[in-house]
Image (cartoon, rainbow, N blue to C red; front, side, top):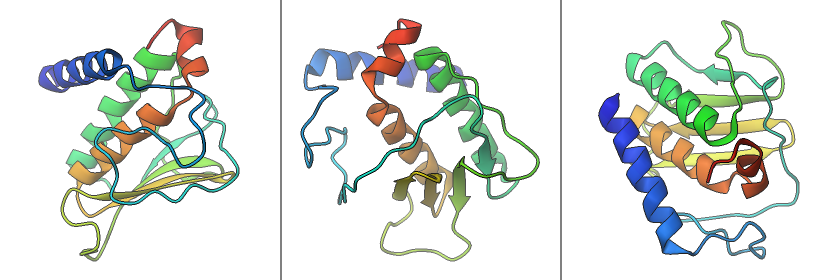
Length: 151
């Protein structure tokens, strides 16, 4: 856990030093490190708030640990404290481990979908979920971080 926090801090410092962050990036110019294999930008948004549950598709130990690392990072960055409910609800942030291997995304790849109904990150393994959550942290509007004094 300590190593993941160090990696997150290092990652954040590198992002800040890179200078390429722009809260008002023009459409088609989402700046994410590393650059995704594919980005399809659609209209619409989803408001992440403390009322949004973080839903896990399984009781997988690595998935649960990955979720808790993300919750700590999100709290540190924005002050938002999401919960992991026992039952899925509407308008959630859902982490889905694929039941069958999707060769299009490989072992560490992921698909991140943001819609007005919620956010879904699906991957073949917990590592893909981790990378998807790191991408999600990068696309959080800087205004949300400014409220906490982060970023």
